[in-house]
Image 1 (spheres, one colour):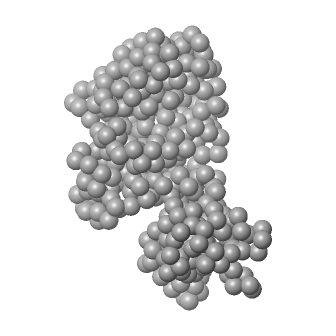
Image 2 (image 1 turned 60 degrees about the vertical axis):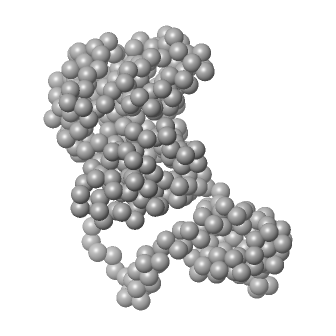
Image 3 (image 1 turned 90 degrees about the vertical axis):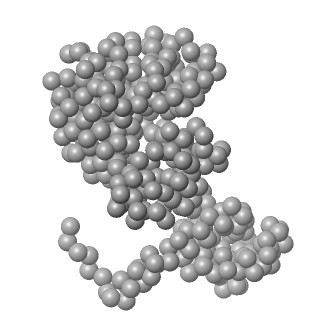
Length: 353
């Protein structure tokens, strides 16, 4: 990509924004949590509002509101109209009401912000050095079920937000050949397994995951009276010889392989190949960085890679499609189909060579 032409003064302005970016972010978080963005939006239709009015109604000091709104005005989140009243800009509106922006903000603030301070150490060591801000685990997956509720909610909201919208279309692909037994690799809370059982009344799903997540998934299956069709097996994919069964008609992985390094992905896929025959399909659904229509989606995915670096495990990322295809072939698979799903996702339908 050629270098963008930009005036020096504009480049300097962007550099200063980057240098002070955490201040803008935390200002946005505070305005959201204090209810200020919602309050100002509701006053837009009557010509805006003053700091005094906000202070009185939300019981926040005028000083506190003053420093926040000055920063917000400089960042084009709010603006001051001719009557010296605050109104919400389009940027402020999206921060307050766009679901993707809200999910990203909560994930960044609650899960990642403190840990990101240790990014430099993670780059040097290949370890998730920021994870100590959340707990004493080797990877975040070991501690997901033990996270404080607010942090856990923000993690799962982020994880589900980027998959839920694709499931309706994805299930049609998964069930094209009417599988009777599905292995859900990395099933987390069991959400996908529940969707599969509700989609097709004859299918059985076996979830492979770490003990903490698996217990949650099986508990959710029982709550939904589907424990007779949803089973599970504990597995640690980083152990020496992880194994799965050989009864699956389809093996399903949704946003799972990005949690591992390239070598680990080959190891996981190779273990799956051992459980496949010539009829088994292995379906990989991912959000690939080189398959995004909009630049902001690519930006979000590449930021998510840094979460994997500093918090999740220290050695994985959001991959390009060409990388995962190469790794699948190295593990003994070939790509039967390459299917675009929704706005962000791709399903690679793999078969054993």
